[in-house]
Length: 279
Image (cartoon, rainbow, N blue to C red):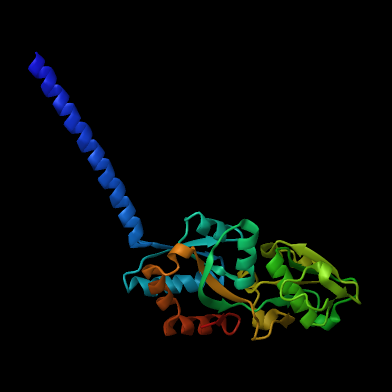
């Protein structure tokens, strides 16, 4: 009886030690796999906004597959969630934003997302279903602009370039409506969520609309805008990642495909100048 009890205790001790050893091995293995890079699940998950970014990424996905790089595309309809999803590790990379927007987002949300490289330039345009020229906008006209700080500031700079308003000296690339120094025609500046502006265009006299949202609603920036940013616009869209993964081999491989001659040709042929490769 004593021998049976002793044998049982020995077996239990050995089993316990094996379980502990197995648990440590598994934990170490998981940690090692994480250190290997972003392709632990076999895919690089990239977030984009709907429209041109999505179209370009689908082309990149097609080309990347030939180089054994599997890309999972996640599409967003706003400018908030792609960065939140990236910060929360639901994405490995995103492409949709300008550097000023990324910097402001990091500041406002206490994040540290970083630029990986320059991608596309989407010249912002002023659109109207009522007039064909900005000079024809009547006094008191309702003019829409995005309500987020970066795109709203960009729109105000565009309005100044179009001769609609004058901003305070030194207001830079991120002015607010409070920085409007002159508004001789008493235009009513209506701030709305960027994606809603095309839908509200009929209710407004004009609106500054980001290219991706314009194209999504059937507008052709180079043809349909009544005023558009110049080619030297500082608002280039960039790819962003978390700082610990920005130099990951998978991202570098993705980036090589993205900035290839095949993708550049696709952009030029598809968007006819409304979207500009910035590399």
